[in-house]
Image (cartoon, rainbow, N blue to C red; front, side, top):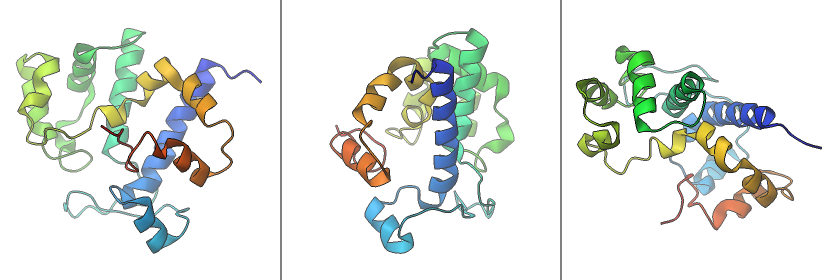
Length: 181
């Protein structure tokens, strides 16, 4: 069976949205802690981020998906792979400034203002209080789909459930979705 790039793209986006909606509740937890509290985590739950008093209803995605939407918008608007300046343009054109601290990280209001100032896009992260935060890398699923989805599908083709997927990637990722250094 051949799967088109379009189908792979939509599968990746759907999986990311579902994973975001489920994972927001336990973001940053080890899988051991998740299994200890919930067993197999298989439900959508309400959650609050940033201690801002907004309890999001079950099924709501988190800030990583908001960044992903901006990445997808940049790709669609350019019609091809994007660079930092393309993503900055989509961010300036489409992000809602009032979202900072609610839907996205509080510091993003400052970064948006700097993005509008003309600082080169590649330099914006240098002025963030959260240097080392993996915001872009964990939110660029569309770009990854364009580059190497076939490799990862082959890597996991024998996996039958999420625990087998976890084992397949444990040698590459640290359990929080971040590559080992």
